[in-house]
Amino acid sequence: MARGGGERYERVRQKADPRAVAIQEDALVWDMTMPFSQFYAEYDLTLPRFHAAGVDVISLTIQNMPGADLRTATLYIGRVRAEIARRADRMLLCGTVADILAAKASGRLALILNHQDGSPLGGMPEMVALFHALGIRAALPAYNRKNDLADGCAERTDEGLTRLGRRVVREMLRVGVLVDGTHVGRRSSLDMAELCAEAGRPFAFTHCNAHAVHPHYRNITDAQIRACAATGGAVGVNGLGEFLPDVAAGTEAIFRHLDHIAEVAGPAHAGIGLDYLRDTRHFWDNVRATAAAWPDPPGGAARVDTAFAQPEQVLELTDAMVRHGWAEADIRGVLGLNWSRVAEAAWSPRPGIGTLGDG
Image 1: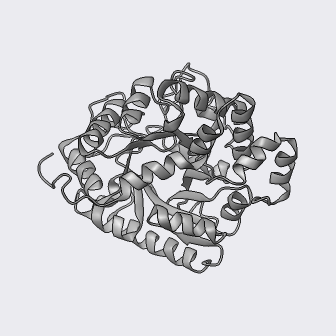
Image 2: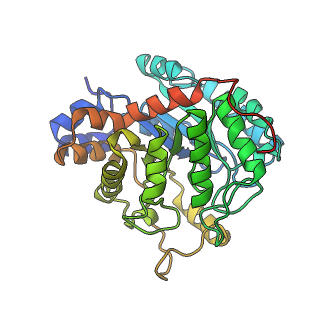
């Protein structure tokens, strides 16, 4: 029985290899990133569309980042939790892999929550435990720009984690929040991977592409990919056209990055993190309004408002893996089982890990 639905999905389904359709409609399908601040939160439009396209799990970025303070962030989490609860027949907020599998079994969309900046902590590592209790299951310390935790990927400097940043990462490892290196500077991400390795926890880049395929400052190097894989973690391919580069954000362009990640680290360390949003005009207006966080793309070309990959392209990506001869087990891993493995290892609390010391 087909799991998906909707006219757009059916059009893709009709063109896809039947083997790809069969795999995706049986697999656990997990998208590790969707912007879900107040500007992009669409409970009754975007989330149902992803579910109709066969996606079982979505990680929602739920802060007005960067710069959200503790009060703003906690109030918004309360709002998001309430909206999800009002739709309990269709979606479920999850804190464990067991919750996710239960949501899938009941035909509901599983949702997890993430933060993409350390500002809601207010400089207090002990707030990591509070946000974990409220549902945060993945977080990164800096969004493109330098802050009091880390350098961002768009900075001229690349100085690594601060002492405070190291304390925050250790607290994430202790309470069971997945440590995410997306948007941070290269040295900062390698510092984070090293701390994860010491703790025996996986490290992730939830929505990043390969710098070797396209040398954009938001994409990660092979050294970063290998450091992530060495912890047992995974890299989720991003669907924003500027990072591919492809104005239309086509599936073949996404596949090139996925294939490179798999070649460098093995398919067990690749996943999906499309980073989809529907209001592209708001996004690009914000990019232009925050030029320090979003320098011009490499090569000196003028910035073009590229598209974002659409939810139905997950099946196209499955089809691309099938056409390129990927093993079914590897395809199922990329679709969701790799994230399931990473989450299981990252989310279990380990009180013996780390301290709130000086970093």
